[in-house]
Image (cartoon, rainbow, N blue to C red; front, side, top):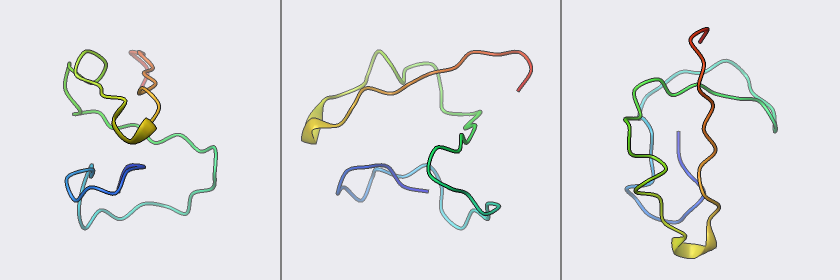
Length: 57
């Protein structure tokens, strides 16, 4: 699972099997940590992360 920039560190996981997905599908990454927004960067003109908070996930 990789992000939108051309950096080897822009990954969320390796050897992760996912069901078939399509553009627009949401994937929950439950253990991403608490600093996704505060440590976000606009490097390579990427968008800031979107976050959804729910106790139902």
